Length: 248
Image (cartoon, rainbow, N blue to C red; front, top):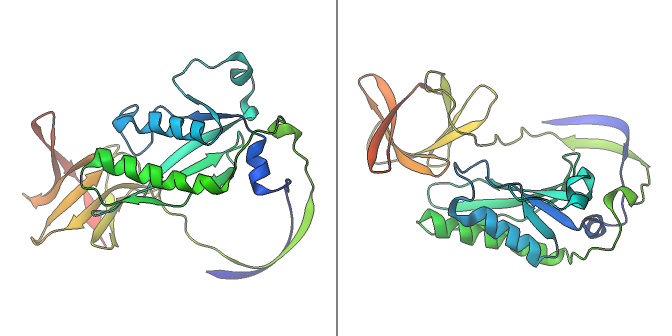
């Protein structure tokens, strides 16, 4: 939706995009990404740490013991996030760098992989996303982020496009809660009331049978006994979770 606005706003202007990141020497990588259930699943967090080091950052996992100069000051480091936007056929990842105020400093291009096995698919997609870091030419300049030059500027915004942000995937919290199925290419995405995407369904040749994917768990979503169920194997045992969902 487009709205005509006449606004006077102030924004922080640094000496250039890459120079913003050059004021950061350290990077913090989470021990577990939101789209996976376990710490360092598929060694993806360790790989992220190593790739950040490849591009000039001294990197640590959130489970590491931090040196005093890093632990005592929050704004002298960047925080690394990896987000997933996969579908049935393609694994898609992006790398996002944020500062201590949760402001986005950099978003990578989307790295993709069509590998069927999840472990190599995530690894390939992550390495592809990190290719965007080549253009950063990151090199720590000896300053700290708080020392960066701030130049307030007056900006007139005449027209701006407003788009609904993409929901973020999160695990299913409670099978008794009603969820909603929104159509997407090749199936549906299941969202809660926030809305957050909690899983995706992909069409099959059978009516009321979908391939279901939630985080790193893949199974089938079927309709039986007047109820939807998400069925998958966990450690060799078949799990059948009731799923209350309303299709638009």
